[in-house]
Image (cartoon, rainbow, N blue to C red; front, side):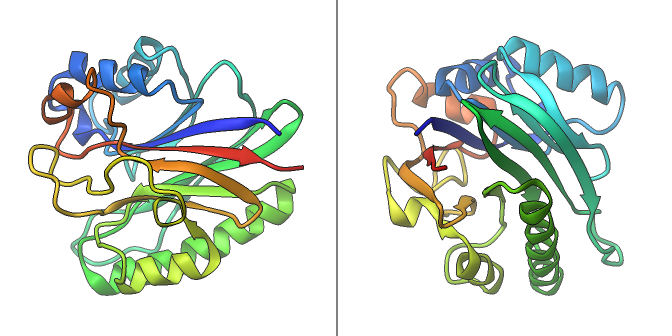
Amino acid sequence: MPTVRVLTYNVRSLRDDTDALTRVVRGCRADVACLQEVPRFMLWRTRRRRLARRCDLTVAAGGRAAGLAVLAGPAMRVLHREFHPLSRAPRLHRRGLTLAVAEVEGRRLIAASTHLDLADAPRLAHAAEILELLDRARHRYAAPVVLTGDINEEPGGAAWTLLSRTFQDAYAVAPSGAGETYSARRPRQRIDALFADPELEIIGCGVPSEPSLSPDYPLASDHRPVLATLSVRR
């Protein structure tokens, strides 16, 4: 069974040290990098492509409105991509879901990225919308799903609990390294997550603990990355 390294990372619109960010992403050696808060204003396409190129990845999917992107490595053959705006919440940022359908060693995987709201009610409503969208994608493409994102709440919250009823919370199943992701300087909250379909085997998940990466975390973004190694069953 092929294994896939999936990264989720809130990159704070590249407002920090992009050299440090590049070192972190490259150091994670991800096959798929699901990003939140990617650039969405001036030269946003160019800046996303430049980041992907510096990390030896390509842009597989994304959406400007919600600041989301999925980047893919050379082992992944991208077959389809989708972007879905989520329902509007008055006076709040537009939220969305982007996904890429990719094939590795003849097996398909849907990698999705989202960034949920700080407000409780929209966050829960959007989590329910995401479950419906991913269920359709799962059947349309006949592939298992890994959902990643900045959830903006910790385990036990309403949206997190709703998502974990359908998906495995990868860190809870197979913790590897630390779980807390925010803030990058003093991580005390686990608000960034990977959720995997039950048919995906989770080999390990957590904040990468390599000594070469840790010094760059507070320089690269206000979040720490989360990396999971998954086995894609037939």
